[in-house]
Image (tube, rainbow, N blue to C red; front, side, top):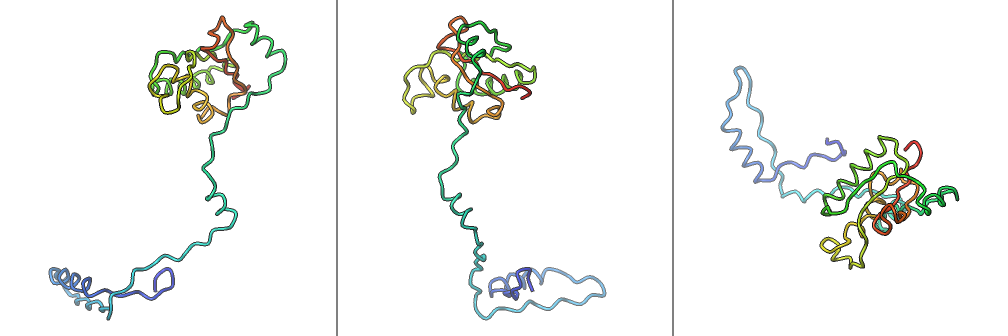
Length: 189
């Protein structure tokens, strides 16, 4: 009996012939008898179909739905004190991460490693310089100016540091204005 409780299917005539050829090349050990030839099935066995697995209705609905979108980074609720300081430029970043001038792949890896470094240092405010965004079609984002800035929010939302980011705000003019962002890192993240 097999593990599934079915009787063994036996060998097809082709499999039995192959077994006989193989067995003819083997010599029995001293003092041992030859094993009997396996029984041949009268007809070729039909292909074995695995038993259908029953999927709970709820799980089936989840599988049928569209793939989950990356978690979007909410604007973040900062208190008015933080908002005033950020808007007036009266706050100094703890860490600056410059992606301007890098290619997309290099910028993505620099963003990931830079955020890991900033978190390890305990930085709360990261100045992220990416360059000014340009109106870019989705298909052209990899090649035209402003490509990093166009992809940046997607990278942040889907990246491993998404849960650590409390808020994202446009940087003050003295820190880069339209070409830069402040990332506010959650305390203890």
